Image (cartoon, rainbow, N blue to C red; front, side):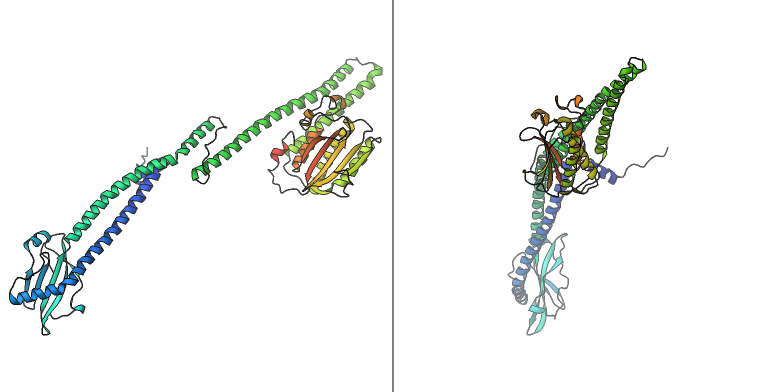
Length: 506
């Protein structure tokens, strides 16, 4: 067996980082940023403080160096003790010797003895008669002095160079103490910041726990759960709003799926029930004829009955095939069609079926009908609508009753109304007449020959065209079927209108 090498430490740290909770990572990142920021601020502050303190020492040296150098030279000539502050270092150098004129034992013990070297050769005169302050080492490790050199001359004859120095240990101690206190303060601030950030981040991300709980409930099958709303200006609130909208869509999709399955089961059950009656009649008459139970004089009646039931079953199957094609079809091929011309054709067909009827083509408000009403639609399907509505009028209204076909426009929709003056339907039936296989108790019975699919086909075709079909009472009695179709069809894709085509009502 080939053994795999153990994961590297970096990979392990990366994996641990990825596995850690979001709040822990946020706190860690906040603490890191706070620490880096505090370190940079401390470094900058100490640098500024050091420059300020050294500048103070330099100003003190530059202000007193010449005076101290002259006093030291005079004291040397007079062989007297110079009157110089105790923390100063004074050294005189000429071409022959080097003499320390002033440094106390306490100063040596505390700051060490400076090692100036040669800051200024004898006989050289720098600008301003004083050198720039520089750092010089000390015999005490870690200590430094700040020194300047002043040339001394008598009657323009170079006498020597006096080095004046001040210890920098005080500056170093101030910086060290400041860094210590600042570091301690930084540790306290970082600890408090990390603790406070953990509390605040945990409280801020608390809605995510609610989201996790809701997700668990949804996984268990409860799609009614919702995340508690938060202000959408926040990330968590925006996420909660998006999740709630997504959950609403998912719940609606499942509800639509269940409703579609229920409708399909009802449709199959209704179709089976509708087909069972004519099949049973045909089978019964066939068996009766085969067994010789039909008298010779009744054979034409039996054959007529079989033919009637066959025709009815054929009509039912054709209607079912039409609905199935409409349910499967996702798009149409719109062309310009004139509804006014189609209304004239429908009136001619209605007159041919029942010459005793008075057919009128009018406007919506009983004014003159428009001479032309062109829309974009599928010609065959709109013809199917007109044919079904004419068939319903002939089938379910008394012969000779008048019919009006009203045309007009409302906004960007064309309106067509088929107004009959028959028995009409009840308000309860108005909500159901577009359902498949639905019949009213009186005028929609099987005795009239209807399959209960005519208005369902009308509703499906109008929905496919982004329109709708409604039912209303005709003034004076009767039924009005109102079609509303857009004059211009909206842009479609292959997946549009899927939900509209599978509805039982517009």
